[in-house]
Image (spheres, rainbow, N blue to C red):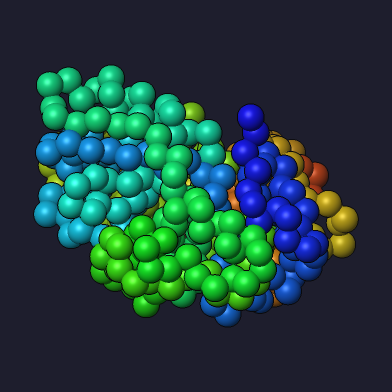
Length: 343
């Protein structure tokens, strides 16, 4: 059965299309909802999958297998990580919290089962287990950060009161100081989701404006972390070996990844946005592809794209036939030893 959020019964709710099917694209005015979310609102992301990873050696496994440093992870602290192929390409991206008994991971819609299966197939003799945790739902609260709530709490929020999924309903949440601070302890009296929600269109517009890529939308099967500017935050080069680390370290040390993430500012006179996956060209030559796109309440139509590293930063581009200029997110020569100044 296709998932449908209880919040879709709220007045004005319009269902989103895949990959965000099951939650509201907007509730009647996505520009106003961008303002509301930017000013401390919240967004229903309950269509995202949640996986529970348990066992005494769960953090040891994540330390050895994924790109993030998990050794000594504080309970309740939100972290993001990647699982790479042996060649360094991104296979899974997820975030989550450890509560001292389990690591609760949130990932893209429809990706939870594959993540759990990968963990089960690569744990070997390690004492861990991975399973879907369908009793939890993800919310992005602009004040508290990403928060897991009990799905039953969504029924209360659907009623329009918007008074929090807090107290016993709050499972985990990140501190909202903008610095990636220590998360609230699991089960803490954290109040989130006050007031009317914003839809995922508003959430996507602000995400693109912030230059945050989304796995499966702004990436393809060849994407490595260096191309997305994730080195030193989501992908580490000094924590020891993990799967795919050799590629990450080599590109970091030598600089110049094959491609780079860029934000596109699109021609606002065109009455459409580029299709996801559409070709980006320069002088008639294909140099990359469009990922996510949205209409931002201040910046106008914008998109994220992966383009060839060698593409001049001031080159006029066409994204699905729409004129576009670049705003650099990843230095074309990014690396440990080569840091060319942008012109």
